[in-house]
Length: 401
Ligand SMILES: Nc1ncnc2c1ncn2[C@@H]1O[C@H](COP(=O)(O)OP(=O)(O)OP(=O)(O)O)[C@@H](O)[C@H]1O
Ligand SMILES: [Mg+2]
Image (tube, rainbow, N blue to C red; front, side):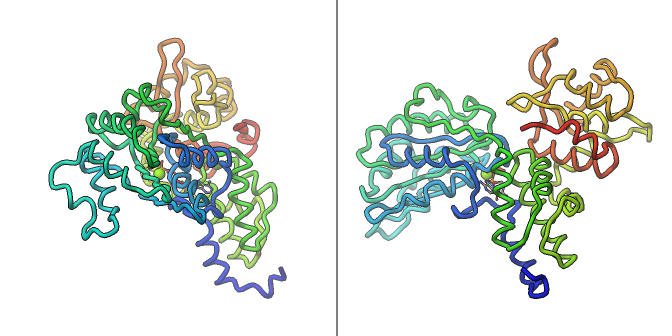
C-alpha cells in the first residue's frame, strides 16, 4: 500500500484492537494453531458422558481454547449452551455450582436456578438439573481457574459428580481448566474417572503457531513484517502467546510512529522496552529481588539468572546446574564451573531472592525450573537491555523449542 494514503490514526486503533496481550481470545478467527486439540474437545462435547480437563502452565492459552473450541458446533438441529464461570480460592461445591445455577433459567420459570436452592447444593441436585437440558442443546459448562479451589471436599464431590453423570440420557459436558503441571494436583481420585475425563495437557505454542499469531494479524492490518522480525518475536516469546501479542503490538506501533507499514527486526528490538513494561508487575518485582545488590556489593546473580534463561531445557522446562555452565562462561568471559554458582541457584529458590527458581529432585540430580513461565522471556529481554548479555550471545545459545 502506498503509505501516502494510510490513515495512521485509524491504523493505530486497529493495531490496539488486533493484538490482545492480556484478554483471552473469544473468536475462532483470532485463534491460532491447536487444531488437533480443538477437534478432540469437539468430539468430547458430542460423545456422551465424557468431560475434559485442560491444564498447563500459566498463560499458554487455556482460557482462550475453552472459549472457542465449541463455537462451530452449532448447527440447524443443535445449539451450544455455554456456561463459563471462574472458580476462586473460597469456593465450596455449593458456591461453585451456585455460580453455574445463577446463569441458568429454565423456560417457564420465574427465577434463575440458584434461587431455588436455599440449602447447600449437592452433587445430586446438579445431576438432576443438568439432566434437564434438551436433546437439541449441547450444554458445555466451563469451570476455569479450577486450580484455585482450596476446598478438598469440593474436589472430591466433583469427581463423584462426573462419575454420576454417566447415568444421564442427555449430554452435558463439563470442562475444567486450571494451571497445573499434571492432573494429579487438580483432580481427586482421577483414576476412577479416567475414562470419563479427557486430559488435555496444554503445551506452549510452537514457533509455527506463534508465527501464525503474528503474521495473520499483520496481514489483517495490511502491514508487512520481515521473516527475521517474526523469527525474533517467536524467539523472545518462548511459546507464550502473551509475548507474541505484546511484541507484535509495540512493533506495529513503532512502525506507525515512523509512518511506515513495515516491521523489521530492529523495530522488534526497539519494542522490547514497552513489552517489558506490559509484563505482570510481580515478574518485574521478582527479577529485581533475585538480582538485588546487598550493601551495594557487586554480585553475579544477574548473569547467573541470564544464563539460566539461555539454557536448553528438557521438555518439562527443567535444566541442571551443569547446563548453566556454558552460557554463564560465555557471559562472564571466563570458564565458570558449578561450585562457583550453585550457591546463587539455591538462593534464587528462596523468597528473599524472589523465588524465581524452583528446585526438584534429589541431591545429585537437582533440576531447576522457573517458578513462573513468563519469567524466562522477561529475563532475556531485560538482560539484553541492561547489557548483561549481548545480542551475539543469545543468538549462539538460541533456545530450540
Ligand atoms: N491460540 C491463540 N492464538 C492467539 N492468541 C492466543 C492464543 N491463545 C492464547 N492467546 C493469547 O495469549 C494470552 C494468554 O491467553 P489465555 O488467557 O487464554 O491463557 P491462559 O492459559 O488461560 O492463562 P492463565 O494461566 O493466566 O489463566 C492472551 O493474550 C490471549 O489473547
Ligand atoms: Mg486462563
